[in-house]
Image (cartoon, rainbow, N blue to C red; front, side, top):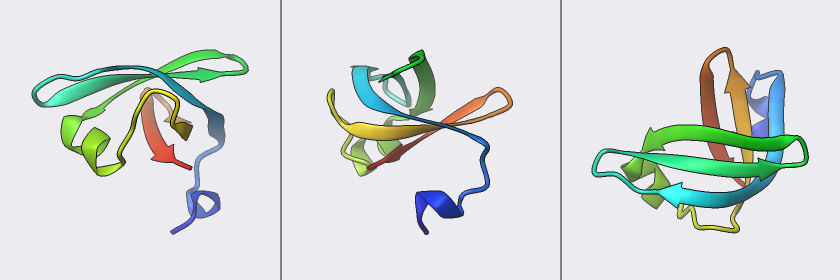
Length: 71
């Protein structure tokens, strides 16, 4: 499935600025042209996506939820 196939109106491209790893969940700060977007995702997802500081991602915002997709 491509990013374009996801039905989310608010998509913000950016780079991972900071990762705060936890045992179960982690905090990901994404620097976008409009400011910092923060997402809390499972630590397992951080590892599966191989997210690192500097990774190019898309922050997908829906209501109170922010998802991360690696580019």
